[in-house]
Image (cartoon, rainbow, N blue to C red):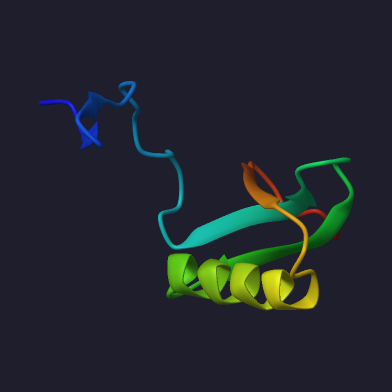
Length: 76
């Protein structure tokens, strides 16, 4: 069964494979692609990412942002 959003079906998608408790991500500005933040979250990973996204949005209230997940950390 497809997920629906506002009556329209969403594209099929599969969960990210790998460690479910670790998310490597970067937060970019939509307009110019500027890297605004990055991180690796573990434990309550999704919650930690969302808190970070919220904080970045508060720091940049007039910018639209996008979060991208990566297969490894941004720094060593």
